[in-house]
Image 1: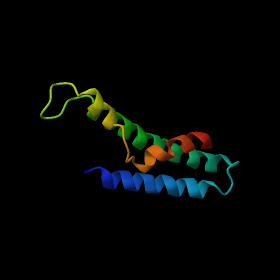
Image 2: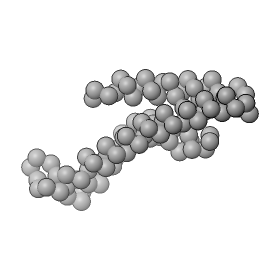
Image 3: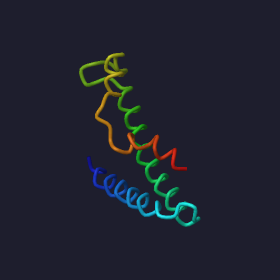
Length: 94
């Protein structure tokens, strides 16, 4: 959608900050870059998780107010954006 460009720019920036902080991670400035990149990734992943949850609850145009159990579970199927895949790895870097 309309936020895909911004998500891409933020994920690219987070990747750049991760790669630039690898050099000397014991230094506080490099650790701050790592934390900043992780927070950027968490914001994008959190937005996507919230979007998936809120899209899975209401029913479709042909159905009722609340989605069926099969429709609810199908909302959680792949494909996932890269931020959701990288989320567990970003927790390990902190």
